[in-house]
Structures are given as C-alpha cells and as structure tokens.
Image (tube, rainbow, N blue to C red; front, side):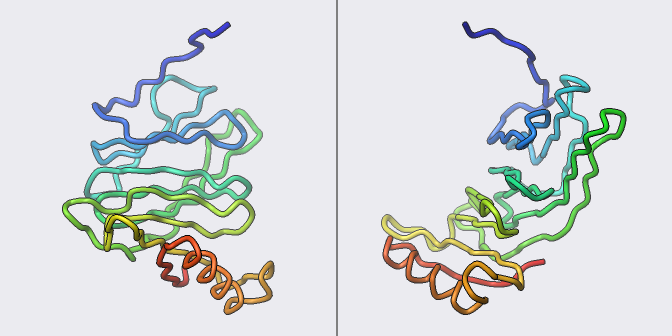
Length: 178
C-alpha cells in the first residue's frame, strides 16, 4: 500500500531534479529558480540549506554514492562540486563546503549543462551539455582526479574512456579537477 509520508516544501515554483543521499535521510532538489535545496528529512519539511550559487536555472543534482561529495549543474554552463558530509550524530547538522566550479561547457541556445553523474567509486563526475549538440553527438566531459589506479594510471584511463565513447558515437573531452 502506498501512502504519503512527508511533503517537502522547497519554496520554489519549478523543480528540475531530485537526488536522494545514499544514507536515505537527505535529499537534494534543484530548481529552475536558480536554487539548490538540501533537505534533512529528520529535521523539517522545509530546506535545511538553500544554496544560490548558480546564475541561471539549476538543471541537475547528484550525490556521490560513496564519498561525501555532491554536485549541481546549471544553464550557466558550470558544474559546482561540494563537500557534503552527513554525520551519524543526529544533533550535528550536515557539513556543506563548496569545493570547485567546473567551467568546461559553453552555453548554447540558453542551455548549459543538462545532466551529471558521479562514478560509482572514484571522485569523477560526468557531465553532458547542450554545447556542440547535434542529433548523433553529445559532448561528454570526464572530470578526473590526478589518480586513476583502477586503470593503471591517467593515460590508460583516458585511452579506455576514449575507446568506449567513440564506440558509442559519443565524443569525449577530458581535463583535471580537484
């Protein structure tokens, strides 16, 4: 049987994306009103913290499945990376620290970064944007740290990603972050 447990109030007109923390008690909501709302489901139905760091609509949000990272993507062509640590102590509020603003995408027809996804184990983020978009080609940025031990180093990882992307007809462009 389905039932409504809680109704969240982000205080925004248009919600663009939502992601649930791997622990299950925190939710990120992005809005077309340039807001990123962090909800702590144990505290309240209103946002614990509302971040207004983007200049245009926030299109996507994502928590990293294992690391204390989350990100937001916007029509301003940027991806914002945050450290967001949720502590087991219920009396301590989550810790949110801005880490990096990635500016690799260009705004095309008033559209910027459309989607983001974290790698399941590494601190890498993948982002797809409207720049250089055509019917069969999407530019995918692979943001990677300076360590790539799973692939035997940075160059072999880049080669593996290039082969994979070109085999699917997707152009890949790589650069460093963090």
